[in-house]
Amino acid sequence: MWNPSPRQLTTVKSLVFLAALLPFARLVLFAFTDKLGANPIEFITRNTGDWTLYLLCITLGVTPLRRLSKWNWLIKLRRMLGLFAFFYAALHFTTFLWFDHFFDIDEMLKDVVKRPFITVGFAAFVLLIPLAVTSTNAMVRRLGGKRWQWLHRLVYVIAPLGILHYWWMKAGKHDFEQPIVFGTVVLVLLAARAYWSWFAQPRAQNRQVRPTPN
Image 1 (cartoon, rainbow, N blue to C red):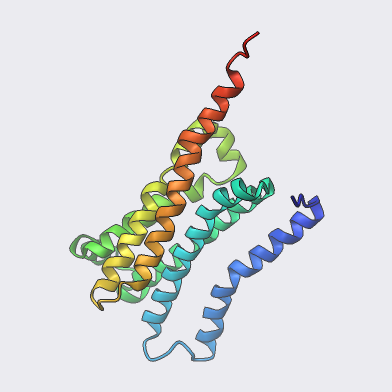
Image 2 (image 1 turned 180 degrees about the vertical axis):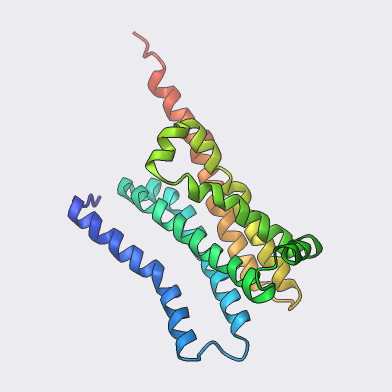
């Protein structure tokens, strides 16, 4: 079992930070070198949406991987990965608001109400905001551990909404392969997290507090 030193953990965090930033750097490079293809808006929308789901899945995978590997230090990466998922979701939403509606909030809201796949995507993004805002240590202390944990269980709603948004978006092209893959991954990860949070962990705590017979 590898237990990194503080210096090694800092190095790991830096490498993960750079890796998570690479898709954005690639987008910027493609924009400046005119490599976004015939439909740049679609390229940016698809790319930022995909990376939102990738990083959401990676974030959800931290807890199961930590449980299976016993690498408890992995938990120190989860907050950063979650914030990067929000970062790409914000870019995805900004692309929609900027290039599709030129920051016309009224028209954007009409589109949200009119098209179901945008409705669920918008709902997922709005629910992500309080998770990002309360990701700091100060907010954890202010909310208290229990309330913070319950708030961050919104991820059990956000992830399915994100998959549904992706599914409906692909439905017009009859392309369901990637949504099925993402949906399966998210279902497995959420089921694993739910099992450890609501069944395995409470049982372990009960065994610890149960008095041993004489």
